[in-house]
Image 1 (spheres, rainbow, N blue to C red):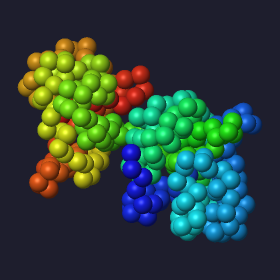
Image 2: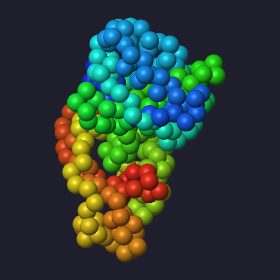
Image 3: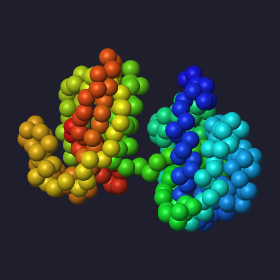
Length: 285
């Protein structure tokens, strides 16, 4: 992978750095501890520039955080006005693919070797931060070991309904063929969804997605009822039984997506997604 120029990727992503979350580290030398230390130093700093000087000592060697701190110290302005209320490890040793999916900025900033170095030993830490206005919000930090020490890599959004849809189009863009992408579709699909069988039997059906890019995506509805689930399409209604419908209806969302094709033409689609064992998965569009 070719590393992009740091400032050319876009400034919007750095705003995520101001969206800290909670942290109480049970293991003083564990993954959550470095997130706790990040916010401790931030709150103790006089201003963003002073904290930016601290970031390099907390960041993984492959992380773009150090360059951000050097080039754009004001990106940390909101962070110094936040207080960490708790942090906990939610998953350990995520794959290289999962690392790349955390943000487009992070993926573009890392070489393949750097991704593999992070993938060797890492964790996702859920942190909750109290902002200057007293409100709380969550962010999930990717952390990884560097010479045996836990270091912060990059903050990501909490996983939700939109995440799996964006991941679908991200993988579509990177897939070398429709058949290769069909393997990804099976992995991202809900067990009750007929998408898995369609991907197995007609992989070429997904070829069009490889020439599309997400313009924007947002949750349009949550927890639609069983009748709305059945009404997604006539094909879907005929392909699922009542048990599958009830499983999907337990926790779901409709994600509205604006997609652009190779010619730049935009169109809207709606994805039904649902949780399986706590993970958001694709159901149908």
